[in-house]
Length: 273
Image (cartoon, rainbow, N blue to C red):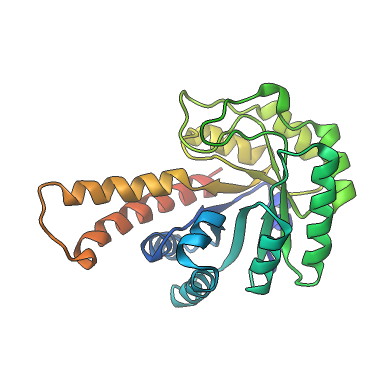
């Protein structure tokens, strides 16, 4: 099943899928062990920084091979693509889905860039995600005036034909300074306004019940990144305390297990929404 079809199915059922970023073999393995145990599909995401770190072809081949080895239904997605050139490179490498993020541009420029990507992706039969509104990134302050508006969302999806839309409703990328509060009423309005599946970025740190409420009100794809990195590194640091072990094959499994536990819990939360 193409990811476009899966997301539309989830929208019709008011359900969601986890989209988890991976950074190396260990985090990839941790994610897929959890998906295998829960027997749930997953979207594997690569950011541009992870692609630079691992190499595009190595990362893509590793992800596709691991999906087969772990017998998991999944898709490979470019997270926050910054240019049409990067999108094209990922499509050429066989990605099932790409995100073009021109949310820092004017809405007209965002539409223009996104239209170019949706046209390009047609040749690959790939899913296209875009972002509308302001979802604060690391070091940025949240701006309530730049939340996604339903009328803008309707214009945007109508003009671009995008397959999935990431919206700004109160989430942020990275760690939260205080307990987040999603604008569920706004989310519900957007969901009713457009036929396009909706994406929540910045799910790390959002309370479980709030995450489930977001799913019930229209979120179909849940992006998770920061918590995964944090779980892996915290477990690794704990393992290395007062430890002279130098064999990474001995110390990494604890960190991988931490990722598995995190992802398995997130998947169960999403499933129970």
